[in-house]
Image 1: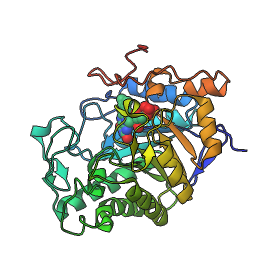
Image 2: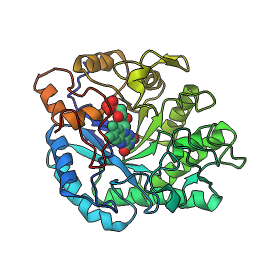
Image 3: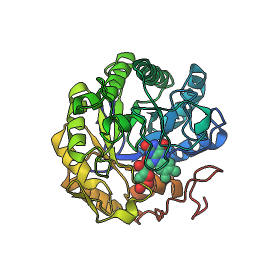
Image 4: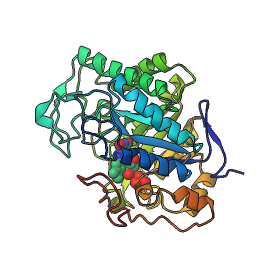
Length: 362
Ligand SMILES: Cc1cc2nc3c(=O)[nH]c(=O)nc-3n(C[C@H](O)[C@H](O)[C@H](O)COP(=O)(O)O)c2cc1C
């Protein structure tokens, strides 16, 4: 009988339960991405609160490519010691922690005039209107190497794995998307070519960290607009990723702020759900691959999560905003206080003073 509080494996890492803190940018580092006391405190609270697997907020792999303020950095070796302190802290509570690695790109309005921002093609991002520089082959190699170097730093710092951010219209998602990628070289055009950038990042990371180190990917189920990446393509990407050795896939969507208001709408033949926005998408993928699938988005009620566990092959359940409101949520559920989350999913948690629950004012 499957149980939310039973151990699960991702590659060689044992996770004490099926709950994941989905990557959540906290906006609480120093200006150049170094750890602060408030950030250590947040991670300690999550670990103390029995989150099985904590995914850090997205960390920038290149100093010059910081898509948002207050992000954790992983762009050089100066970070390793402070992250050893972080991973030691989390491990004291028997939780696991992995770092999410990202290249932001044009889905950003932060300091855009001061830096070169890479993109597959010179197509304005739909929400920010930012236009990037179409990458040359040497730009592509530069970013691939930065992902790989950052992964090795994570391993040295004691992280239990890494997650490649391939979702939410950031650079990797844009390479996958036929809307954003109109290249005519080996990185664009056919579906195989659009996947090449993600695969080369993965191969280079694997070369650096070895076969036993958990490497996860976060993907968007669909671009959720006509002309974008479709769910059928994402299904094929997942099969390909499984075949090359990816250890787990988190299925998300680039609509988290709006998803609540989109409940009931159908895209690519599937529906956004009130509980588990992308549940239908994750469920189908979980039937098609044999690696753990993580669902994220709108999870609020332990009874519904248990039902998902029993009715589908989804392995892990990831939560972001409710853990800003209640870092002790998983512990409370484990202790049989099964009330739904307090978070009302208003998405007002991003502030210039740091990201926190502004409703319940923790
Ligand atoms: C304040 C905030 C920061 C976020 N930062 C990240 C991030 O760094 N990387 C990422 O992949 N998703 C990020 N997300 C999206 C979440 O991981 C998650 O996919 C989304 O919030 C839906 O889950 P939820 O309904 O449990 O909040 C962020 C969301 C919020 C609210």
